[in-house]
Length: 218
Ligand code: DX5
Ligand code: ZN
Image (cartoon, rainbow, N blue to C red; front, side, top):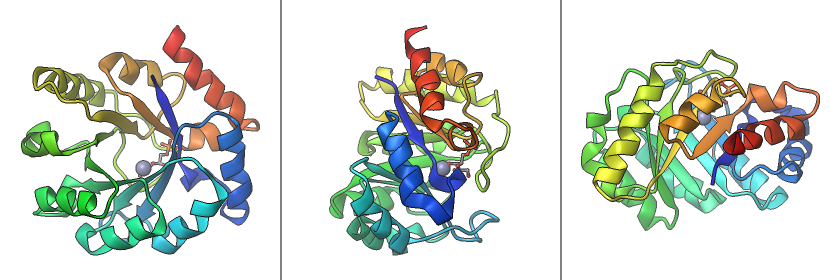
């Protein structure tokens, strides 16, 4: 089953509870929360206190994308704040294996993220340890960027590795996902689709979610 994860990066921060409830009522499966520290990526958003503030206004699982240096430092606080999945970039730590262990020790699901310029060989040794792998389909930092078509091959390669190793982690994609690009990565084997601007920069976010979900049955 395909899952749609709206990214609140493109929501109206001054009306965040309203914008979260709109996508929840509209059939979203997860809520994607983009944490940026101004170092790992050239943009700044929010931290654990935002996750804690969001937690009581939705029953959607919170998919927390940590675009931060020294991610281990923040894992306990994000878990405490109510994250359901913590996603750490393999590029952000020399100890990705330990980071995945630490996330599990904090009682939440562990995901690893790979940037467009990072090969899958970087995460191969930890695939048996993860619940989710996020393949970036743009360079992280900003909403509204163009989907990188070359990343479809990476998704297909990861899906093949998953079946060969008989593993069951979910494959997530993030960046430039629209009704035009989702079919490409859906066919390649992705399960979870993050979409920010496509959903929120529209008059009717719920209709956008419907359009994406309908692709599964095309
Ligand atoms: C980018 C973020 C994305 C972003 C996607 O660094 O990780 O989650 O919100 O935005 P769109 O869907 O507009 O590309
Ligand atoms: Zn993201």
